[in-house]
Amino acid sequence: MNSLFIEFRDPLFGVIIFFSLIFVIALFSYWWGRFKRNEESRYLKSFMNVFDSMPTEQELKSLMTSKAISGKSALIMAQTYYHNGDYEKCIEIYLIMLEVQKDPNEKKETLFLLGQTYFKAGFLERAQEIFLQILKQFPRTPKALRYLLIIYEKMHQFDKALEVLEPLDELGINNTKDRIYLQAISIIRSPKFSVEQKSQHLLGLYKEHHLLSYLIFEYLFRFTPKLAWENLDMGETERLVDLLWNAPDAEANLDIIHSNSYLRELFSAKGVELVVQESTVFEFDVLIKLNIADQSGATLQFDYLCGECKQIYPFSFHRCPNCHSIDSVVTEILLTKDHVEAHHSLQ
Ligand SMILES: [Zn+2]
Image (spheres, rainbow, N blue to C red):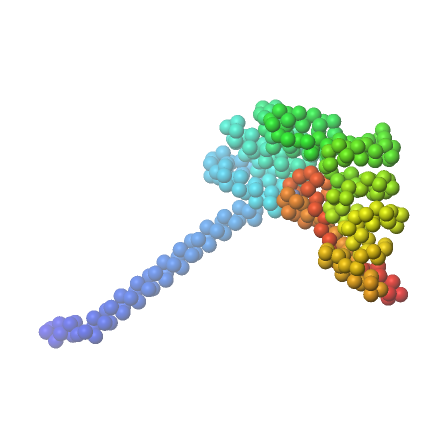
């Protein structure tokens, strides 16, 4: 018995106990960690399942009325579907939210999101009904008025769009650009005027306000190029670079081209007439050097940036498809391989 007691007091025994304790603690913490990880992944899986398989309308309704899904969770779910382009499911959720919601301000927000989703999905008439419904109850809602304005514009109901500007004016919002833009596109689409009359009206609008240079000169260069050249705003040449590059009758307007340094560089790069030997614009400079060496194979292409939201498009626009700004297009030059020349040289 005594000898056993001595063995317990042996330092080696203490060391064994110490390491055994460490082993047990390590084992327990490893097991606990695994258990927690499994729990978390189970929770994540069940959360993701909500997104994978949409509950039926009835299931969603009962989940929301029983408060199993909060209004916030439903909103996050709807927004996720919206950003993934699944507008049908997004609309379904908003409609159920509207049935469940009691607070008029909450309803107003959901109605706005519903209208925005109908608009994005291309259901313009439904979007129009929703925004009118909001404005009936809350007439001083600028964001609903703005959507209504764009909807009327897309539906070519320019008179109605101009009417929407009045309550926006009353709210103290500056709508000068919108008003001139609506006037310009209603002139362009009007069956009452001839092409010549349209050009004169557009030019009148430009001379009065100095806005919408891209929209107005695009029309002028397309249908009445002589008028466009004669009235070209030299301060806007960089913005109109793609229109000028593709402009018909450039050769007939050498006096105008010679009068402006940017035009001289642009048309030397194009090879209409080699009047300068270099340019501060890199793309022009490369093309001028190629022209001097009597070589080809390169040309210009254009990208279009929205000066407001910085989105880039391969096509020009008058109202940004993303942020709906007017007259925000910035033309960007790209030096590219000339496929026409390459094709000819192969023949
Ligand atoms: Zn934009």
